[in-house]
Image 1: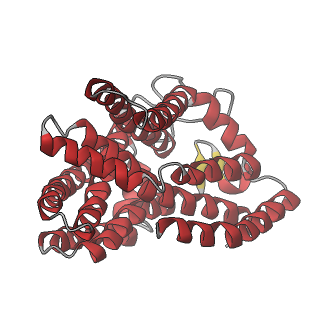
Image 2: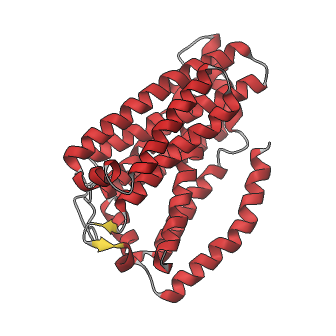
Length: 325
């Protein structure tokens, strides 16, 4: 591995963590959106809200980390992405702010009607945000972002078959991981009825996420042939196979009510998808720009690597403590 690749792998690790942890966070909002009405629906919403309480804001650390590393280590690529994909990035930013505001306001609601309205804002932004971020990945994967300011269409760069497919997959995988995590949480609290409700959601969402992934591969075959070929026949294939195996194993464990190991395998299934895309994308960063060409100077890359390694010594112990709450 060359020095110019190291910061990008750091960013990809951050992306995998954000997709798993932040995706589950967004997925909790999805289940609030489709919970319906009545006592059982309120229990689902309350459990989703309670489970996110210690970590809902910390998950965005990974998004900030990704943006900072790419901005510093690959400025030309970052500028092209930020300008060409300014619309979906703006939508995602608004969604994140709306989620944070709704989450904070929920504690101060004075009536059931107010709480429903706040929950609706939270839930809608929980679907809109991962979809918008997924379209960004789709735009890069389908090579619709070119070098320049902006280096591509402001509309079709993210409203295209690959972007839409990956946006849908982002929403579905978040709902899937969230339901698996929430099943384990409900079981830990001793609520069998609520556990069963999330178990059913986990099984259904797992099948839906698998269908979305399969549909996404079909879309890639016609719309992003290079990525499809490298995913199904090249260096990305082992990660793709690992994702499929982990996903199936997760469903089997949830079916048998083994929720704790299912949580880890669900995370592996999602993270392996990110790994497969990264391997298939390499060495191209953007259309007409390789990773080596996009990298900043040697001194900057060294500074980024050192800063990340030192920061990790502080960040990971803090997060480990947080996730034990």
